Length: 231
Image (cartoon, rainbow, N blue to C red; front, side, top):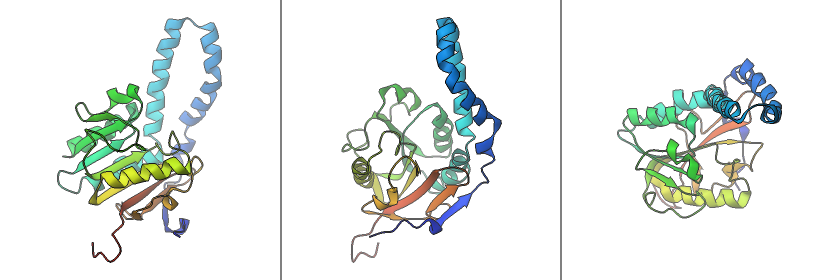
């Protein structure tokens, strides 16, 4: 059985961004939401919620793992000419990454099981879909790369559903494609142990990357070659 060996991970960043003033501000604001809703007019609450979400998106974009995504992972994916990429899990803070991919020459599809997230996907190439289900149009194809960041542990949590997701991810991945999985070690089982039919593979460094002061990590996979294959 494959063992999860943290010695093969590369730890980057000193976590200073994780300890930024913004993190403390958001921690203080969360308990105040209920009080605000009780004493403020609805219109004021709506405007404050929009502002809060914008500030939250900016904070998320400043997290070390998100910076690493933009500065290391995306350029590595774009090193292949005109790649086809499936990006699973979209929100307002993923828009800069999608723009970076498309500007770099990638053809991008997006998917999210939340219908409300469709506005953050790629128009004409977005699917409202659960990654644990068999692929349906427009995702009934294979991709040069798949990026799935912040989905495991945030909806796909249990070992059974994680295994199902990896089965579908392997089906969607081209024979020499690369799978990028971002996840938090405190929110779901050890994913590399559940990635059947996939093998660790370097992309922009080692096949696993961790971050100081954070439970977030990236793991990179390719389809495992069949026994006896020279692939």
